[in-house]
View 1 (spheres, rainbow, N blue to C red):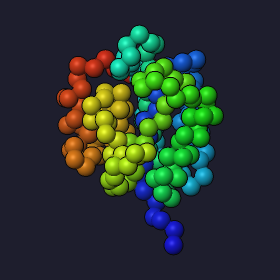
View 2: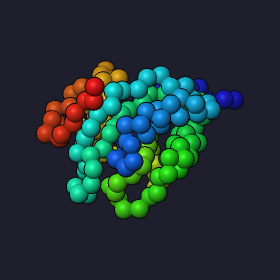
View 3: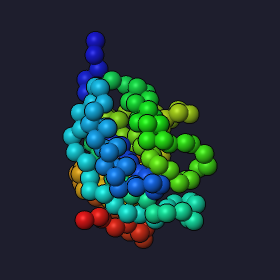
View 4: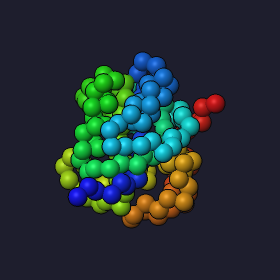
Length: 163
């Protein structure tokens, strides 16, 4: 029996090469995934790096997709997209050609070495919450509350919507 489709939210970020073009192309790549349908994507945002500060600003967005299948299979597809864009995993918070983070996968909750849902830091990052609030302002994140209410927690983080 096939699993019912769920709504998944994916954060996109890049700060190497042409990050604006990369994030736009990655959104298109998400829309081409087998077993997934792109529902919407946020505007692009320029944000300050987190962790390693001596690196270029990031371009970020969030996309919502309808996904049929498991979170593990979807995560593997996200990793394949990253690899296609030349992603190399090195230091935590290092510059990258493309970063795709699975934020939410329907109502699934889990803590595993390879995947924690909801994403463990999504409520702490303006580069996630601001674009997420743009496309799903009424969304309730289990254990955190309404996305729109969480924005006050990240008000001090630099983020700029691109035209």
